[in-house]
Length: 274
Image 1 (tube, helix red, strand yellow):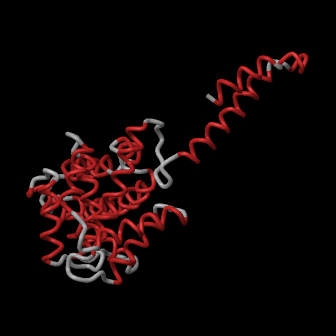
Image 2 (tube, helix red, strand yellow; image 1 turned 90 degrees about the vertical axis):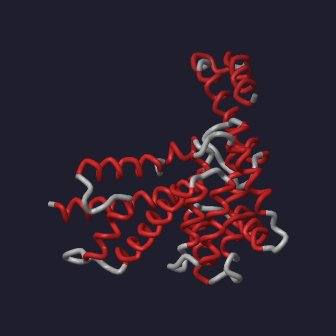
Image 3 (cartoon, helix red, strand yellow; image 1 turned 45 degrees about the horizontal axis):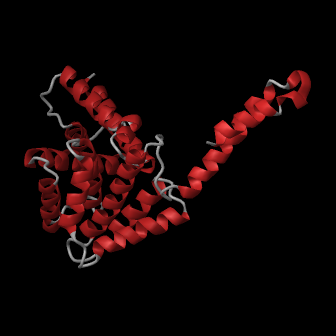
């Protein structure tokens, strides 16, 4: 509406600028656009942003963010207490996603709601599953972030394992797929820690084994099979694809970071095979 009114006013007053009157509608269009942006920011969902102006897209992203932080809190409390590593993981999550002060407060509030004994996990999962409809991509993406939280302290406790299976079952994700994700993401997390320990002239056998597991392939896989697995993982973590699946823009930064680790694992395997 702002752009429309701005353009019309520019046409009306274009005569006042003489030979430069043709610039008036363009100036009106630009001013109207600025007005629309400010109005949308003030009336938006607060800490949910989207490339699309579609209310349905914004609602899907809001639901994803709400479900994620509540489930992160519930998962952190699964073994009885929220560890320092899990708190650090959540803080890193908020830092990497670039949340401002208001958004951080909202995320912390959701996290705390998930840790409360009265939190209704089945109801939250039912709402999220209904919002996703038949699209499995947001469900799998949500599960990936939960698995990353579960591995925050380097181990997967029995309580966390049971909770992840409960979440997967409620979202209709097969057990075989969940087990594969647990293996791959666990290996990716350990591989990242090995890489941060410092570069080595020659990778240790354990590090190379982690690289294969991070891509979800075996040592006996062909070069073509490894390349196919690598491209599939990179496609799953592509920013545009994730946003199109209802993942908030803030969460895309984590997928980008994950892509870097996948690329490092792939490069390590290629170098070893040469």
